Length: 440
Ligand code: LLP
Image: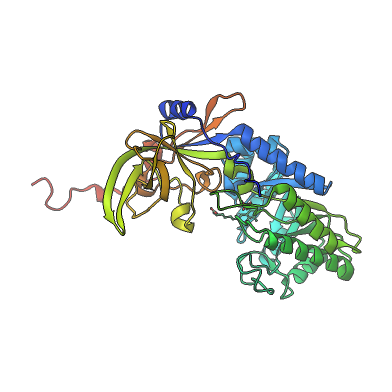
């Protein structure tokens, strides 16, 4: 089988030098053309498989305003999972009507804010939420509603356990009757229910679980049409398609994925008379491969280790700009970008600056002379890096630089300042007294 083409976004050596000199490191860099191409390809693939289809960008993957604005320009709806993400979409210039609101525990205030702004759709997760929406609808227009379903598909053990995962905090369970109950409740209350939603997992390289999820949701919609006369006009099958973090990750092509997903849904809908709009809401597969993180190497240290020695290269970032290796054991490709790679390589452990026994990126092959001052780029950090960054060890969160389609670098998020770092805090006067014994 031919090797899949490596089209992950990466910087050229001269570009890396410009970014490091102009904006400093660590820096997230996003390729605008790359991101736009990923969206266009996904939309085209989905459209080719099913004409009445719509793509939503799951902004939790990266809610940097400029990136939300690009997704919106490219025709995506924006999936927001909190009031904060919804406010980000509004700040990015997206009309509320183009946004969806998710969340398994939405507060009444969040719902009131979203409805007051005229949000396009709420993905309802619980009976309490139905009641809250009914109460709020007295004073505000009720948006289109979609019920999030727990279809009972476990993406990890799916192949072996057919009953699957009913144990989830998200959505209405199909198997225990909650989903049907919620549908009836919405219909009785006269709410503008439009259809159903599911999302079974993330970074799925074998999309069997998503396809089964889509199928189960479609079967449920067909049953609701038959038993309750409810005509779904929307079925949303979430996101989840994996990306190529390392060469061992071989995701299905988006064209094949859309074709298989749609075929399974159409099969489940056959004979139901339903012809709903199909929606997907990917995050990672749109933005993940479009971003890199640029770090500068500081300390190089060789220590005795099992089987010989280990050489650490410590970079000027880590856990606070990319918690995924520590959280999920995530692996990333690391390349030396300046000086340009070449020559014999050696194996390194790239570690961060944080007070944590982290091995940020283990077993990385880099030119053997790599050391202080060199620039490393970590590929595929476009998704769930900036949006999951923290201030651990009081590191300011880094800048995000956009490489525009015309080749210009534009800062779309500047690094946090020290003033911002401490702006939220105050010290009660009594704590300002001298320490006992100090100043003697
Ligand atoms: N829709 C819903 C309802 C979701 O919960 C998610 C992700 C998505 C769409 C987008 O999924 P994607 O296409 O990006 O896989 N922090 C984790 C990922 C959590 C994903 C949660 N939900 C990580 O860093 O891997």
